[in-house]
Amino acid sequence: MKRNLLLAAGLALVVLGVRLLVAAPEWFKQRRENRQFIDVNNLTPERLLARCGQPLADETRNFYPMVARDIRYPSAAHSTVVLKFSKTAEQSSDWVFMSMQDATGGTEYETPTAKVTALACLDSSK
Image (cartoon, rainbow, N blue to C red):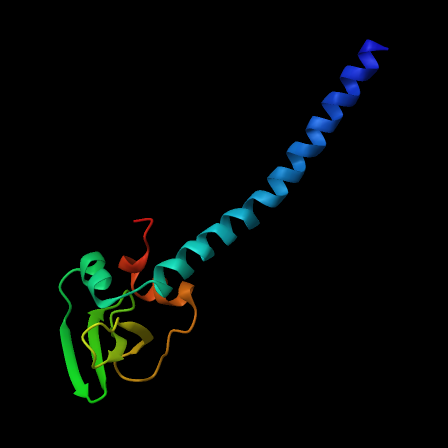
């Protein structure tokens, strides 16, 4: 009787272990995607400069009542990416991350994963 109970408990642990091994890759993938989403959606020019260092160019233009800021960095694909921010002309306004695209205008990076892949310094895990 005791042997059967131990066998059943051992079998239950094996089944649980296999389920965890099957689910783990998806869990890690989801965790990475969530982290990248947070990294990109909380991006401000100040955080970008702190994380990625000196840009190739940093241009601010006043289009009253809006202010636009384009910051350029070399990408992993040996091209230049432009990160676009905007805010209202009010002093208390915060910068909003608008888009990230290739400087030639050919590629727009839509997903957080694409953005982090193109500009690795955006990844908070590094």
